[in-house]
Image 1 (cartoon, helix red, strand yellow):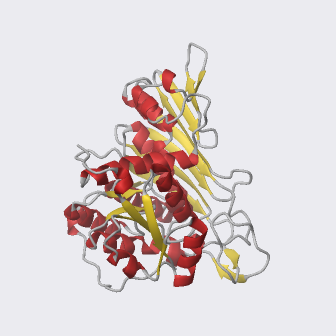
Image 2 (cartoon, rainbow, N blue to C red; image 1 turned 90 degrees about the vertical axis):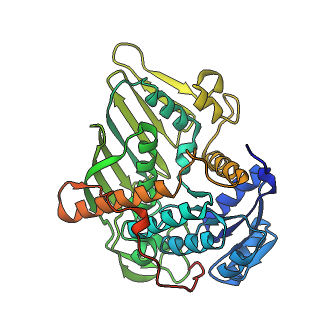
Length: 404
């Protein structure tokens, strides 16, 4: 039973980039009070607070975490700081929403999962693609047996914002973004989504990674996410992949194949999947989020446009607007945070969370490491789930870094 109104909960951001703005906008639509943000410098925090109309510009992450008014911390800093910032927030008694990937190694994500469970606080990872209404609809139909036994999932996550060798962002840097870039940054969304919709986890993988631009030009300033290509810069060696092809074996025998790319011209942000079963198929594309394609062998194919009057109860519940009133990217964030903040209002995570938790973030780190190992060895590699989260080592660093 909810005892606290969502609108009485206060949040703050660690990070001042594109995702911080998206998180904040979704929270304000729910009526959540977003107090402020901490950035890589007091100046960046002040600029973000001014741009986003926030009342507080924190001078540091430590100052933000010391603010007793803050109930929930959203971690939107660069990937290599997620572990440190999320752990510090938990230790400060805050509920935490962390951008993906949850960490840069499974040892770090295991530690975060153990700490989150021990804290009793709500912990969530920003796998927001689950909250498109048609993805909720697809899951309900698959788990309800509408496709029969699902034997194949295929699809892709394609972008073009790193197409040119003059394109640069902190994610390109292995030290900040992690060992896997395209797979870790957007592939994790695809893998989490198809796991959610199908109800099956990846058991083995065979992967091929490709760095299209082994040298990129790093500009003198900061390369923003989805920023236009520059023309000048310092040549820098690139150690992370621009694209990946991944074969997958899932628990229960389902097979999968995925293409992940940040160098596909014309694809701005397209996540797509198709599930094929003995009784039918379903397909969805994030650039056409209102449509759910339904395939059949012996009758005409159908295209279900999002309309709560025509959907399962799960799909209808995820629809905030009537049919013909489009829901898209920002609405998926809002729906995710509605579920998370409902748990915060209740005082802690439910027994069966209806949102992605640190357990889901840890799962995708385990899958990512199997993908990296497979690409290195050229062999099928099993996902290792034999190390319990509670066994992870404690961190050695005690100083909280501000976002880079």
